[in-house]
Image: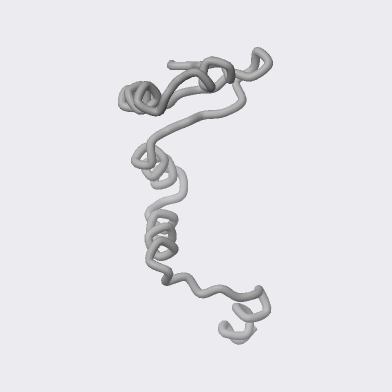
Length: 82
């Protein structure tokens, strides 16, 4: 497991962080506790796919293509006839 403190993270440039992320996710410690995890987009998608299935990835793709319809819960219920 790779980890950095907040202070170390502030000193690293993005090339070093990219190099670390090629191997695994990076855990960030703050106040002597693990607080954050940094990972590549591919690892994040793989994690979502494992935990939530392909529907989540499809939703991200739709969002990226501006295919998401925005509206309220009432709008959705109206479309569903509820």
